[in-house]
Every structure is written in C-alpha cells, then in structure tokens.
Image (cartoon, rainbow, N blue to C red; front, top):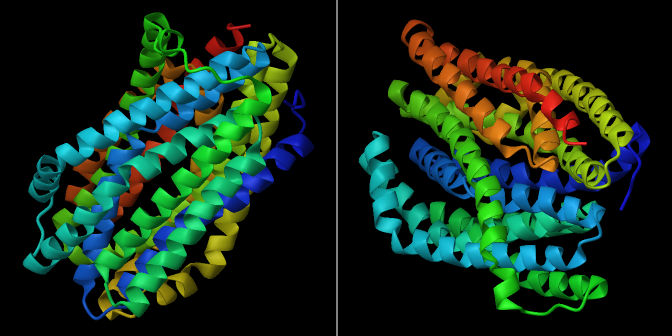
Length: 436
C-alpha cells in the first residue's frame, strides 16, 4: 500500500489503469464501426440506444465498484484485513440478487425502453435482438465491478487493469468473430459482451479468492458477513452512489433521447462522436481511480499532508492530460468519423458537430477527478447532491437549447453538465479535509 502522493507515483499507479481503460471504450468503438459500416443505419441506431440503456442499468450499480474502493482502501489503511474479505462476499451476494431481479424483470425493462424511444420497425427489431442477449450478462459485468473495485482499493492497479483489459479484449475478439464470421450483426456484438463478461468474472473470482487467502484465512462467518450494522452502513454509502450513478447514466441516455427527438440519423451521428467523449473519460478516469485508493488510505491512516498532496497533484495530471487529448482530437476527429461509417448522411452530421469532441475532454477532466476524490473518501452524500443539482441544470438547459438550436443545443447542454458537476463538488471539498 503506497503512501506517496507525488505526480511520479500517481503516474506509476495510473499507467496500467490507463491502458486497461483504453480497452473499454474500444469495445464500443469496434461495435460502432461494425454496425456503422453495414448497409442500414438502423443497425447503428439500435445498438447505440440498446447499449445506452444497458449502460444506464449496469452503471446504476456502479456503487459495487466505487463503494468497494473506498471501504477496501480505508480498511487496508487501518489494517482491518478481515473486513476486506467480508466486504467482497457481501457485494458478490448483492450482485447475485441484482442479476436475478434484472432477468426476472426483463420484459418490464424492455417495454420501458421501447416506450421512451420512438423507433422505426427495423430499429425496434434490432433493439430487441440486442436486449434479449445482453440482459444475461448482468452477473458477469456487475461481478467485474466488485473485483476491480477491490484491487483499486488495495492500490493493486496492475491487477485491476488486467481484469478490465482481459474483459475488453475478449469482448472485441468475440464480437468480431460473431459479426464477421457468423454474420450475426446486432446479436453478434451483444453475444460478444455476454461471453466475455461471463468468462472474465469466473476466472478472476477464482483469482481473487487465492489473493485474499494470502492476506487472511477466509472464514465464511454468516453472522459476521451479514452483520446488520455493517450492511446498513454499506447501504447508506451505496444508496447515495446508486442515486448518483442512476442520474449520471440517465444523463447520457437523455443525450441519446434528445437526439432521437430530432431524427434517428442524429442518434447515429452523435453515437459516433460520443465514443470519443467516452474514450477521453476512461483515459482520465485512470487518475481518478489511482487517486481513490490513496485518498482512502490517507483518511484511514489520518494523514492530512498525504491527502492534500494527492488532491493537488491529481488535478495537475488530469487537467494536463485532458488538454493533450483535446489537441489530439483536433487532428484526428475527421479521420475517426470516416472510419466509423460509410453512410454519407451520418458522416456529414458527425462532421458538423465534431468540434465538441475537442472542447469536452479538457472541461470534463475536473469533474472526473473530483469523483475519484469523493469516492476514495466515501463522501457519497456529496456526490449524490452534486449530481442531482447538475442533472437538473442539464435538463433545464437541454429543454431550452434544443428548441432553439437543435443538435447544437444538445452538445452545449452536455458541456454545461460537466462544468456544473465540477463546480458543485468543489463547493464540498472542504468536508473531506475535516474527516482527518
């Protein structure tokens, strides 16, 4: 467990996460490229909407990762090793319950998605093809949240990176295989995610068990694991993260919904551009993830100097990298769009709004870093309140701006959303220092 907060050490912790995180949006980019180069835009539209819906569903349970990081890091900082094993077992139990509920309620979720979006007959058919397969990846994808959260909390970022990288790499391979070899189209990309998430979760659950055995003797004490007070504490922390995650994923689904109110071509074009925004987000999240562990450790060990230094240095790294990404996107955005689709109308719309992928990486870098700091400190109430305020601002701006500026208004509103998230969390920052 590192107690260093220098820029050099943050880079050391972040680099493996950086490469692993690159693989996550690459999955979406490959899926977009596979669908965007088929002969019908309905494939790309359906995949974009369906994957957006599942992102909202699964990332709503992001507390399984974020809650695990903060609590594992603080338990390690205070040498409470038994609590770490109990925490993992509790959260895997939650995963099983959540996965079963999602599968049992899948018809309700599907009908809700259909009611939200106004889809053509072909797009609705492809949407259903994707949905009926992807829903069964619930256990695998949510389990990966818990396992990666554990190793990030222990500052074993190389391990968490291997897990994420393996999942993403196998996802890409299986998707390419099912789409290009078996010609399964939308079903192929959904099946690729299902197979890769299931394979990854089982392999690394076994690995996690043996890693925990190196720290302690694992005893399955049911009364201790499911202690009411500890579950209540986890619930209080995780419920706030749950609300925050639901609102965050809703904001991106709302982004897709707004495009759908204009046309399906706008949805497809925005889907291409949003992949670059997600790519920058996952790159910048590498700093947030590595910061989470050190922030949690500094609070657990009552080290205020370490806490202040890691916050300062993490912002320097995040903002600098955000600026570099913006500059890179300025030169490659047009080539990226041409690679993603050969449909002239979709390409033209994407090019018209491509300057937003240059603007957003830098301005969004601050809110991502604040997220990591507050997750590491387990200050989830503040994360929840900041997100509620930011989403309200986002919705109000979007309603006004889309009526006056169309798709331009959607992109302006999204930018305002990122800025509001950073400003509201900055207002809460002093509360973290007071924990020590």
